[in-house]
Amino acid sequence: MSTTPDSDPTTTITAPPAVTTIPRVGIAVLIFGRANQVLLGERKGSHGAGTWALPGGHLEPGETWAACAAREVLEETNLAVSGLRFLTATNDVMAAENKHYITIYLGCTPTRREACRAPPPVMEPEKCREWRWVEWEEVTRWYRLQDAAEKQHANPAAAASPAAGGLALEHPLFLPLMNLFRQQQYWMPLQEYQLLIGWEEDR
Image (cartoon, rainbow, N blue to C red; front, side, top):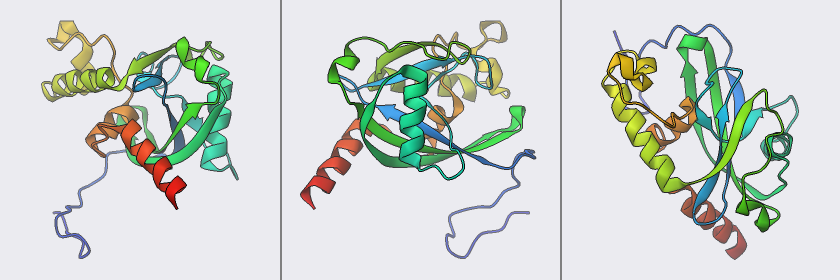
């Protein structure tokens, strides 16, 4: 039986998935390049292997969000970034892996604009197969394909399997990136980042 909190009568409380680990804080970084591009990497060696994700990692004890974002980006891509700003957050429950993350998203740009001309080097090859600058409209298209495929299957993991009758997803997205669309309706991150920067400069 569900209950409804007094503060929000439109919200229904349901039993959470069977995850026994304590939620961790992850930092994901939207690095804005040229022509509405963002930097994505193909994960390997851990949960979400084979999916495309933003640079980022775990928040360390005592670390600020911006410091974590700058550190992780430098460690993973050798890029220095500027203009780090908080954008949004998602609640990411990975029941199959018994993992639960609160993902904090920050936006920024490369300190050296010429760094956007080519993908950065893979600094941690055990964690990432490649980096790629991708237009956000293309990321949105990948999301729509994956969302449609997952809705056709009781087991979302089968969505990318042609043998299971699913769509052959060439670029499956990591769950937090999927949730950026599903939970936050984040269709225009660059515009939101630019508005935030402009608002701060006008103060």
